Every structure is written in C-alpha cells, then in structure tokens.
Amino acid sequence: MISFRNHHANRRFWGFREKFNFVPKMRKIRTLVIDDEPLARARILKLLQSVEYITVIGECKNGKEARRQIENYQPDLIFLDIQMPDLNGFEVLQDADLTHRPFIIFVTAFDHYALKAFDVRAVDYLLKPYDDDRFFKALNHARQQILLKDQATLHQKIVKVIEAYEHQHSDNLSALEIRDKGRTFLVNIQDVYWIEAEGNYLKIHLENQKHLIRMTLQSIENQLDRNFFFRIHRSVLVHKLYIESVAYKGNNQYLFRLKNGDKVMSSRSYKDQVTRYLESV
Image (tube, rainbow, N blue to C red; front, side, top):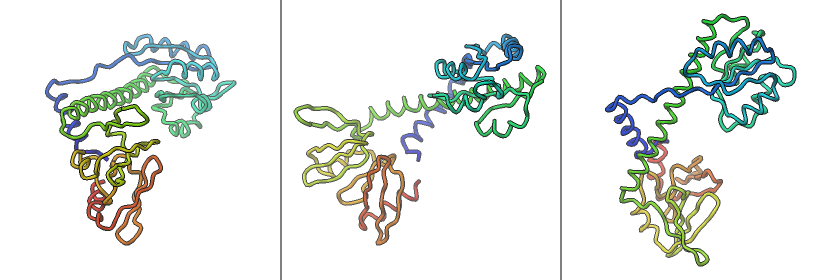
C-alpha cells in the first residue's frame, strides 16, 4: 500500500531528477570469479581486465572457498561454475549466509542445468566453450540489472529523506512521550501498531510492547495523520501500514490481523470507515 505522503515524496523525487537531469553514476561492480579449472578462471579474469566498471575482488577454486568469500566480501556479481568437486554452484548459493544476494552468471559445460540456474535468478548462463562476444553480452546484461537495482535503492533513500523532511514540518503528531517506572522517553508515532482507549488513558501497542499514556482517543486522533491511522471501533485506532489481513466476520464486523500477531475486531458502527479502507488497498 502506498500512502499519500509516500506518493507525494515519489513525485518530488521524479521532479528532482527531471529538473537536474540527474542520472546515478555507475559505480564499480565488485566481482568474484568461481571455477575449479585454473584456465577457465584465467580466461574470465583476462576478459574482465578490459572492463573499466569491473573490480575483481577475488577468485575461488572450489565451493567452500567460494561460500566463504561470498559471505565475507558480499560481491555484486559472481561468475559461478556449477560442477565443482566439493560443493556445486547451487549448493554454494544455498549454504551461503547472505545479507544480499549477488547477481549470478553461471559458467558451465553442461546445458542441462539451464532451467535450474534461472530458478535461482541467474542473470545469464554461459555454456562452455563461449566466445568473447557472448561473454560481454552476458556481462552487459548483468550490468543493466545492477544499475536498475542501484537506481531503485537510490530512489528509496531519497524518498525517505523527503518524507522525513515533510514529517518534521508537518502539524501532525510525530512522537509520544511515555513515562514508565520513573523514566521518560519518546516513541515514534510510526512505530505504533494500534491504539486502544481505556477510560481517560490510552494503551499504545508497539510491535512487542505496550504503554499507557493519559490522553483521550479523540484528542490523539485529531493530531494523527489520517493517511496512516484510522478508527475501526469507538475505542480503537489502527495504523494502516501494520495491517496484515482483514476478514469479514458477519454482522458488519471485521477482524484485523496485524503484522505483530495482534487481532482487533471492528464495530458495526465503523463499517463505512472499514469499507473505505478496503476499497483503497
């Protein structure tokens, strides 16, 4: 679900790009070469020497060494042989502890692995023997995929900066002051999953915590951004971004399951608000 605020920040981002003709500069692609045959590794390394946007960060002669270097160096791109004596290429990817998955060009003498290679989202499949043109076609394809990923990442970062700026200059409530066991601290309003009225107090439900503050539900509702929070019950406000699912339970009532596992039931009198939410997602 894209909020109004996020949509506005996206428009601001694309306006920024258009106004300044902004195109992200292609960075060096950190590349790892993995093949148990020395001559095969040497050929790939020689071809990569002529490519200015490639930085070779290492070469590996077996699967265990490959797994260790992938985990340690987190390459952007790997040239990966499939048939190796200890671990094959698929086992290397399966066993590696990755914070991000590199782009993969498989290099092998066996064509029957092709379908399985694309199951693990390989960007290309070089069948030995291959000529230079085929090699550089695969490399350029990988480069385009990496550039698209980088542009998407940069876009997300700029959108977050714009959202943070707009949030700081908004009249909406941005944080709640919590007093608990003699200490006072702030909770970001965007970390609140739902809010429950209990007399003259509110129970603030976070992902794994709950806090009480002295305030009425009507008072806090007037200060919240309606693009994020809405009321589903006389005593309950829910953050839209944390809604996992909504199930109709009959009698104009809906069960909201939140991403932290909490379940909240709407009341019949708020059926219209729930319906509008469901139509918007």
